[in-house]
Image 1 (cartoon, chains in turn blue, green):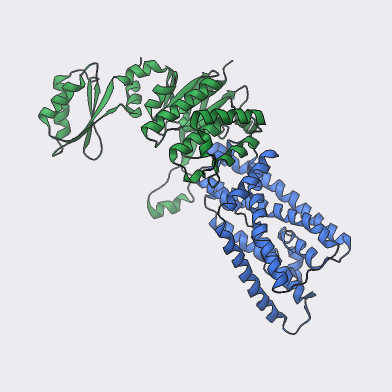
Image 2 (cartoon, helix red, strand yellow):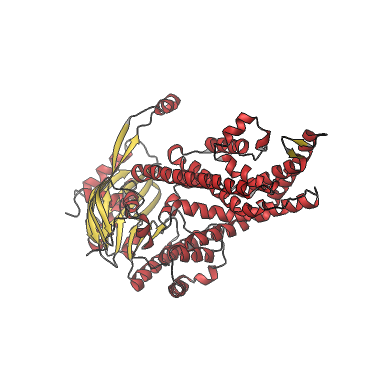
Length: 263
Length: 340
């Protein structure tokens, strides 16, 4: 465990070394928030609620989704692909640590840094400039755990995408496809309520909504019965278990390509 | 029992036969036309604790493949390896705890961080206790003056500094065995000497087994008591370095760029030296690229001075260079039976 904590700390510090990059990440997110504000205000024009959501709820959902997306963007897939293509993966494999955990602990460091440098300023911006009301309620208690699950789901998917480069070498296409799929199907671009009913039903069967939609609902509707949130966490936990198991199987297969076919 | 035991080790790769051109590249997408390459072919040897063994051979000989199997990354096709009684490829993580690795072309240090952070991270990764850590860091301070490098970001280091730090890092957790793959590649003479001193000291003070692959015969001479030479996956020689030293120590390569080089130059040169030195091992002429000619001289059979005078009396030379024999030539000599 110490090994992984140290790795997390290292990636956190490594990210700090590139401090000037933060400013652009923050600006980027603030510009997006501003555009989203005007876009959704014109969509809501004159209507109190759309699909059961008020403008405030929708705006909060959208902007926090984008902040969450920035937080979760740790480039694990690209890192793995880079290691595989350049051969530097051997430096990871000669260490007495599990490769997946090593990648995840680096990812944690990046995420924490992203959170501090992008999400915190974004939330302050939302509160003080757009005067968005945050809701309080029992749902918020479940939020931290839900966000941890979101993180695990996200890095596990990235990790598996990265592993595909054992076969394909380049992951540009597959990673871009993954980004688009997650963007649309997780609720991070448009709240899932705005999808047609049949689509919503289908999306509930996929892991992507567990990454964004479920935790964001805790935030914008924190006054539901406790059971609602427990159910949400249950769904997330199911996907965490399923994806981790899948990732493990996939790693065992993919690493065989390296171990047998050589690098 | 020996620390490392390797028995009948083989590693075969299946490689796709790639075809030429755009059409070929497209057809390759669907091709099942493979050939088998025996990167390592039935190698056996054992290494005792505390030895420094030079593991050498020309490019593509199978050195790195063997090292990768010993570090547990690659699975052998046949045969087995035991390090400390465990098979590295079936127990990658427990093997990794007791091993250190330096690949000269890569680094295990964190590129963007001051180097001390890398040591702190490695301390945790290898679960090194505080006392051992302090003791090792003090040793590295003595050997390479590590302290003044603590705050230096790894990517701003010179290659030599980085390599010294990388070597130190691989010894931090007092491993049983350290693999050094081309540790002096691309370094100038004084830094090479320093690195050799450091490696020798670490081996001596900590009794750590070292397996060194290198292209630089100077590394071998300075460090190893024993060398193992492989080529095309096969073991060519395993024995004390002195025997090989006697062999390559007497050879020099006289490189000459001959003025007005044409089709007949090489033949005229060959005829010239054969006239004087009948023994084919005494002087051997080889064509090199860019109009350079290599004249490989066995100084016991043909004094360097005589060969120089002879060649210069008949040819106009634009440029000359005299170097020690290369790894490829050593291997060639062994093929020709020089050690038998």
